[in-house]
Length: 270
Image 1 (tube, rainbow, N blue to C red):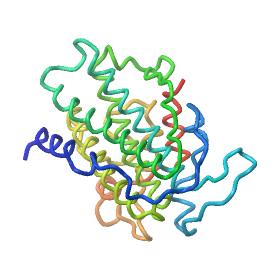
Image 2 (cartoon, one colour; image 1 turned 180 degrees about the vertical axis):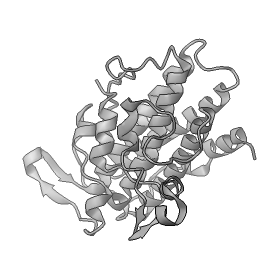
Image 3 (tube, rainbow, N blue to C red; image 1 turned 90 degrees about the horizontal axis):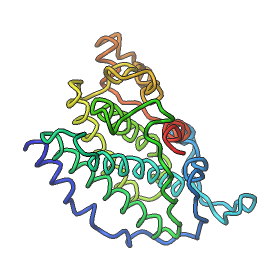
């Protein structure tokens, strides 16, 4: 199956079009604002590796009746999907930016990101939570990039966003384990994001996986996306000793914590 047929199959998957009504209703949480949607998301998997998923607890000081790791993780995911969805929509609308040979790939990826946004909003609503509003994005990052007039830079940021999404979803795994349906959905989205990342990386003549901490001929401005990817120690086993540093690091993807993912997304939020 070639990549376009695979992407088309994924975009039509039953998962993306099924309503999330099977999820139990949780107590209402106040809406997140534009920057608050990013700023109020908690830490990721690191702290949860040694701490069981916590039940909801009152948080009267913040004005929210309840806040929990599950819904905050979904809000973070929604911000990242908003970012990707808008990025591809603008790119596809920019005349002459994407070569005709590559447009079908990004059209399919764009459909997936749109489906992810719809699913996350539906899931948050079914949990009794108001989905965060879409932030205002600046994809130049304050003038550091020109992705909609330079196709090479468009690909660079596409790779950075997709690699961020893959690592961020992994980082939130511990936060969604309390709800089996949400965990399954998050894993399904995560695998699709990984396929996006691999495809975009290969479109840039990179390997489909990350080696060490550069990500593959990426500018220094994207270093936060790849921080920690040079780790070669896994559960006490030094993979570099057995396979070499590049292969040892590439064999295991690393997570991004919630705060790290927030910081990356924040570079592109006005």
